Length: 473
Ligand code: SF4
Image (tube, rainbow, N blue to C red; front, top):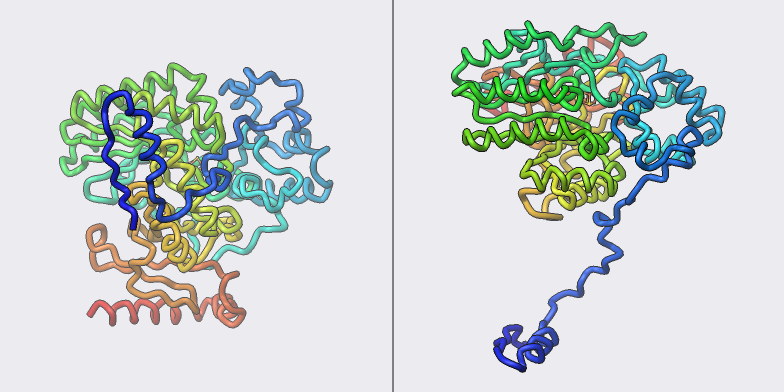
């Protein structure tokens, strides 16, 4: 075999030697055609003017986060006004009925509206996540709770969940820049809907104070997730107040500001200087105190990442701000290995670390979006190895009933026929069993009939737990 090591000479013939060296490189496999590197192939700027309501909007305005927020669609009549000339009448009726049946408020930014393929609205992965259509809704699984993760049960202070020993989840507010159909926190987030009266987690100085006091009194707490709602909707001075109060506490070592913003309204990072500066100051203050402050965000599909996203993420990167991503695995959105691999690579391309992919929680009104645990395991196997390990997400089940996040494949028992997987969480709630249920529409008709009979539920769950116990003996 030809040696691929060539000694480079210095001096006048240096350039010639370099050319020789280039010729001598022995490629073991052909380079990938740049056209196949799809993760780098971003939509630079969404073609928003094809939506009639935005056709006269200048680019500068489209980039303004205030305008994005003000023009977000929250009512069916606004949706109709925006897209009636782009979609068939039947789709509009379906969406209006979807709004009425949704447990989650609807709020969609013009940015998202401009990324949806309105020629194929039923298939579009972004429409699927944010705009409900009645014809696709499926009955909820009989084991579903509105607060399936039991966050309120583990909350010593309203809006502060302390489940893991060293970590707490602080929910300072209950609003978001958009509302996602799949939201686990539909019990509190957004305004009341026809289906659900929400738990009140509004901005409240007294409630925040109680949360800070609780955190200060718990030396084991080191890590605080500031979520919501969404940290995008905190004002700059609120980011500063929360950041400073938490960083001042000796026990706190890490803060994560959780926001879906970069995925649904990246404009804010480019145009809301006070917010970005407030986050930057807290990150820098943390660094001086040897504490880590990062952003956690929430991209689910590669189409959510555009040239605007890239500029926004590079702005944060230049300021030394780490951004990690948590996705939710959703049927017909990102439940194929190809889509997930493209998402993971594209996230890496814009300097966002893919951290987790959640198997969809049991959430009211979105059974059509859930997949099986097996789907997650299969996709994870395929994603692993497609890029660097530190950019490879872990696929987890957030165990219903408060078991916390478990590796999807770490079940004690998975009965693929009844769709029941049994997890344990020795470091969170020792001795307890946590059950996740695959969506009924993925099970055989015979098993669906069993789930339709409440008398069968205990038989199926007890059998799964008994097998899990056998395995653990
Ligand atoms: S942004 Fe987060 S908290 Fe808000 S609706 Fe979406 S998933 Fe829920």
